[in-house]
Length: 397
Image (cartoon, rainbow, N blue to C red):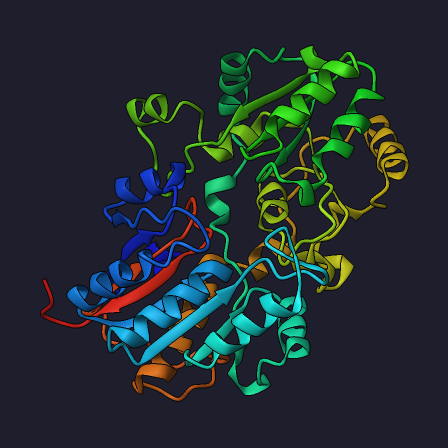
């Protein structure tokens, strides 16, 4: 997204910059790490205030719960009047994998009043925010965007990636991409793949569930068919061979190229970006929840199939689709709907409305603000979780 915004940007992570931060640096974005030690590390707040004040920013943009709470408060303390917050992972019963409680909701709503606009990544999230009590006139729907051309299927990358990962050229590979956390329900995907003879599972990502998933694969006797290579480099700029080697894994488009079928078993998705990326790569997709697809007519996503969440239903659906032997599919219209340039234009409209350079209506987007402004994003965990974006004033160092 930062590549498509008409502002110059910095990124500050609250905790664990992660592999995506390396990609941002490769793209020329300054990434700074705040070193926050946990949700209650209040000592991080004055550091964040100083960072924002010293940067001379026009606008702070926070992403996800922790950064929304700390970032909105720090921005106001630093004297920044324009604050935007984006919520990506708000479910019916959980937020970012954590159970929702009265305290969690109350703290969010209290700090929400410090901002000027709240961005929802889908209509589903917007509805949930309204149900929480966020005023409707403060909510702007700006879906996540995808650079579809980056994910175009490349047969050469498929062959090279399979060789690099030790996957046979003729193997059937089921894939998934995401954080390895309980809410993603990758345990069900491991079980479903274990029930399919000769099927390999390529699960890209990292998180606290990694060890448990590997233990489950061993217990099911399929450890040799389950590959958890870790977090991909995720560089947003085209990577060189040296950069790819340093990242430890091929970039995400190459990993998707190595797959034959993509599965998203998560029951609590706020958008479903990985599903769109898989569709852009020409993969047939099985998903349990994906607002990005579920909120549009089915004709726009002919390669995406909604399936039941239970292990038995997921196993049955996987068996049917593997037997059908889908090859690579044409990129469906839903991918174009979420084009990254369109998403950036809508977000620019929100920025412009707050800073007074154009009317506040985000759709259709207002004229873009002055491209001489600088922007910075501040994530709280590995980028992009807990990110806050900041537009720096002209002439600031």
